[in-house]
Image (cartoon, rainbow, N blue to C red; front, top):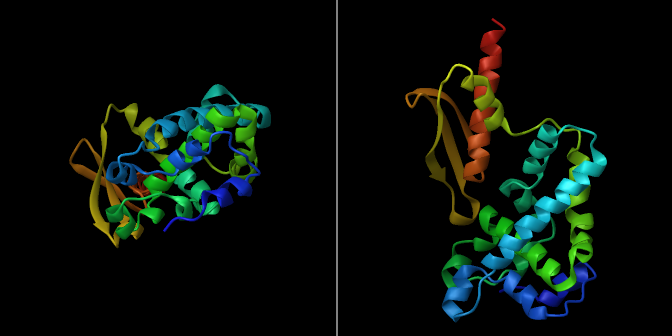
Length: 229
């Protein structure tokens, strides 16, 4: 059972002109299909673009770095794992409208579903209130996290590994080799192969993307150790 969406509205001091936009933002496709209503997918599309632009502007103002560094930093802050953490920080799962099957399978905790809902929320606010009002959410949820992580090492290990091997014209491939745990708390194991046959490393994660990044990270650490011998 989802919470009253008016609570979510008050949390960010928002007053929707068209409250149905907020309802749609929280409406997962499973609920929409069961009730013959419109899902949040189109709002998610808008929110994705709004978030990219807002984070790009924020990083431009805060970091005096080249385009490549800014691009990687933005990718780190708007990836599925980051979006999931933003959504969790405001208990967004409590407000989702889910179909019966999705509800029973723990949909309120699924990283991909929560990440999409967070983008849909931003899309709804942008369409209803404009870009400046969208900052009420970003200022409270996204930008403080970016500031906290501003000096953190770039966590795009897959790109680092790709850059390392591409000079030798080697190919990399990631495969999910196992999934464990209940539907609402899955854990994935990824394996990275070089030239389709050589196992380079493995990694675990709460999402497939996180598992792949950790597999790349473990590979980089392994390569760094071997280079020091």
